[in-house]
Image (cartoon, rainbow, N blue to C red; front, side):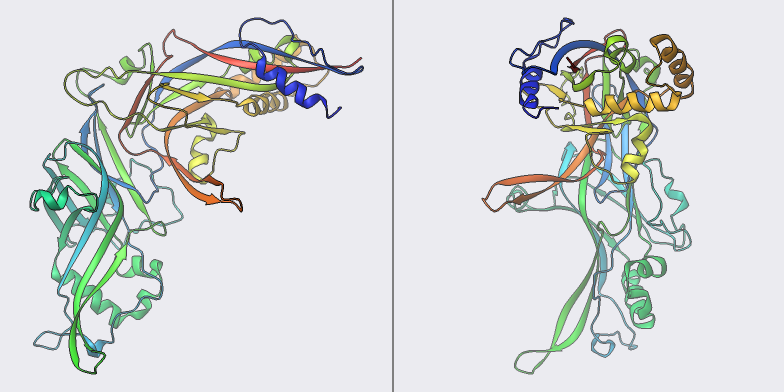
Amino acid sequence: MNKMLWPLLTAAIIFAACDDNTQMIGMDMMPDGDNITAQGKVYTVDTRTVQVDSVLANTSTCYLGSLIDPELRIKTTCDFLTQFHLPEQFSLPPIDRLIKDKEDNIVADSCDIRLYFEEYTGDSLATMKLSVQELSKDRVMEESKAYYSNIDPSIYVKGDEGVNKTLTYSVKDLSRPESETSGSTYYRQIVVKLPQEYGTKLLHDYYEHPEYFTNSYQFIHNVCPGFYFQSAGGIGSMVKSKMMALNVYFQYHAQTDAGNDTIIDGMQRFGATEEVIQSTRTDNEYPGSITFDEISQHACTYVKSPAGFFTELTLPVHEIVAGEHYTDSINQAQITIRKYLSSATGSETPLPAPTYLLMVRKDKMNEFFEQNKLPDGSDAYLSSQFTSSSSAYQFANFSQLITNLRIERDKGSGVKPGDDEATRNSRYAEWERQHPDWNKVMLIPVEVNTIKSSNYYGQSSETIQSVRHQLGMNSARLEGGQGQPLQMQIIYSRLNRK
């Protein structure tokens, strides 16, 4: 095709009206020979709210607490299991330098776990109850497995023989003066004091079995398989923790620069990092006055996390590629979904809306997250267009997805290029009965991690590093639902040969 046609085609596509007018848009400035025409058309898209029982929860960000959704009154509780990473080139002071007890035994001064957090949802003064339980070395969470948010922690907890601590906390630390906790430099934390004996055992294991401290795998399977942080009571706050640490404190002999003997306070930190597993568990409890069946009948749809509400779209691929459009190229497929104001009543603050929504094929949803895929402009698309002023999520162009679905259905049903419309429809019908989700996509709240970089000219850009399920408290009520189809704009192009 003449390369000069592409800029003209692009211009026609940009200015083509996206309405029900099926008149082809001519290209007046075309050279003799081939001619390209473009056409805009609108189709309706049915949507509904879908409830999922769990989502993939392998992430380095954990959630802890319990909140009630002010809109639907669903009580969501989050807690998590975590392992700890062995630092590279790990070492402790030589055993003969450690300060020992009167019987010359190795002893730790103390041991604790600290959960650091900056972000939270809810009431900073709500009193919450936390239970911390040691995990078992007999049933270790393995890196090769996918762990979902309906994980059963009882499978991994050590039981009565393991460490089991209970404490209360609130987001705002009332034990410190306001001047210390209100500044931007203060990092909130929940401190769990473990038995001194636990820290002492870690030190003994290091000096008696150095092979257990060669890497994280050996450390987790032989020394510390991790802990379960259970939300054991209280309602009103949910904290988001990106950093946790297991700390062992001890003392050892050393020498000053002048050669004098001295005693040093030592501390060894084991962090919960990307290299090991953190898995958030979620539990959603419906009020007695409402059921999901009732929610699904609303004249809207919902996306809620971590309550597990997604919005399902049924793309009208059959209509888009039917009749005269079967051989047309699809240059643009666009849909904009408005967000309604929250229906929450009273003085409670509505939950924040998701910053990002992922559109992904329903039958490839789990594969996308388990394989750590990124939006590829083929089977998955990301919308970050939501703003408080526009109150809408826009998927500007997923034409490649429509094209892929057309090709997949043709190939699967055995349709041949020379088949007429009736033959195609007959073969499609049989194939679609065996693949009921072939044209369905899901809108899912996600958390997007990006990295910033600059080029030679100092221009900065952001690259998506990961897309994971949003496990924090987010909610949006979207247009659509029962009897309220959305509108989807399609722009075709057609090559007319002379």
